[in-house]
Length: 305
Image 1: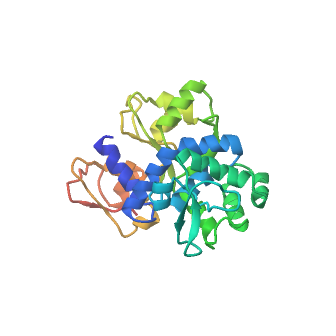
Image 2: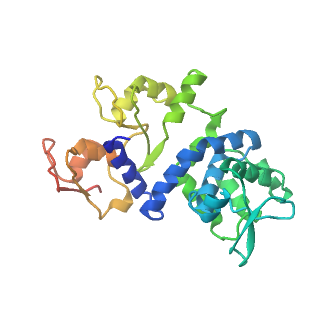
Image 3: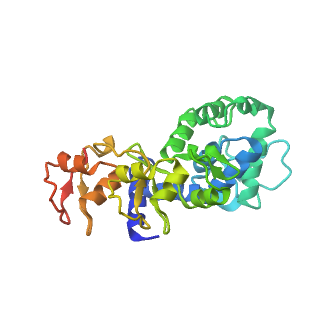
């Protein structure tokens, strides 16, 4: 991972507003590691991949809980009357609750799907649209999956913060883009790119070999619009690590940044800052009452709202 992308990734995690820095990094890593597993379960059991991933993040602390690390149990499923396998004893609703133990993470994801699919308590969930993650989240709470009264909004918050609903549009492991190309090409593209959300704008990070045309073909956003959204000239060629917005940038930064200016880092330009925060370059100059020929110096403060 190059330094530019690494710095940006840390930034978008930092503005998500949940948990500590280590937890945010872990959440992104969890999505990367288990998204294909969640999509596979969705295809076979009709459980939204976004719900599976959000539950995994919340129930296992993004794979860092003792139950996940030692027992491969990502979803906090307890023993129950039908479980004949090994278990761990841990405090939960009661001091000595017994939780299922699996040999692999795959077994945990599979058992989670079967637990919901084969249990009459959750049968009403399967009448819901697979893309309606909000209804699924509220349905899980209503059916008694968790005792936490805020379980549904917690799941919804994680799904929206990490744009997990994008995985609910996968079919046979492929994202439903507006314009379809060959199956092989789609599989390669969306296994290499995650759609991130910054300042209510969606983006991907370019990899080596990406072109405007390829991104356009896979996302359904024309190459000319992509260049316009990213304020790039027609002759600019994408480079690995470039931020590519799929929607228009905004005229000011996120509300959470109202009293938090950006401190200029070595080698950083106004354009870099505008891409980092999803703010139009012209608007960034205007917000700071700067002329277009201004060159930021290390340590300068740039206001974002």
